[in-house]
Image 1 (cartoon, rainbow, N blue to C red):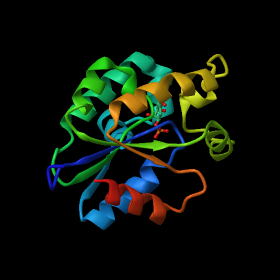
Image 2: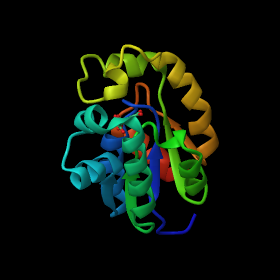
Image 3: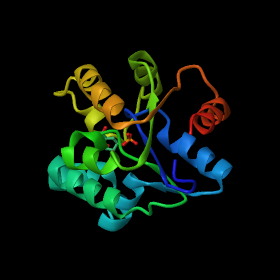
Image 4: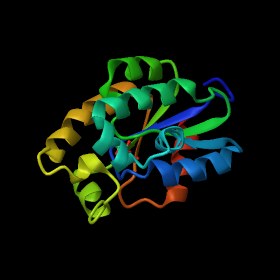
Length: 165
Ligand code: S3P
């Protein structure tokens, strides 16, 4: 890989992108960015408020904008779980270093129990397990490196990512 290329983390909600991303950035001496945080700062609203007031389509537009504006050198970028939904985003990511944090459905369910911050997870009309399996294929297609996270410490996950570069 380009020796100081930014690293993008992808994976379903609850796979640990933020926690792993911060630790990985620290180990590499890179800066850390979370695309959700970029959106919240730009819109001056929480993610649930953006979904409620402006809808998912608006959020996805903001997400694409945030993705295309992050620095491509010396950053670790945690993306939102739905980043791979748009073809445009997948195509953009195909030129970047992308790590998929693969996590079993059962682990996701236990980690996100009681979560209030994720509108898609809370939406009772959506079949989240179906979404998980639909997205799983897209995460695989969009990444060059896959690391499973179930039952592993953050240190072990980060070590595995670094050895796979
Ligand atoms: C979403 C995941 C969230 C956030 C938004 C939508 C999704 O990010 O971008 O709530 O569609 O899966 P995390 O994956 O960090 O929870």
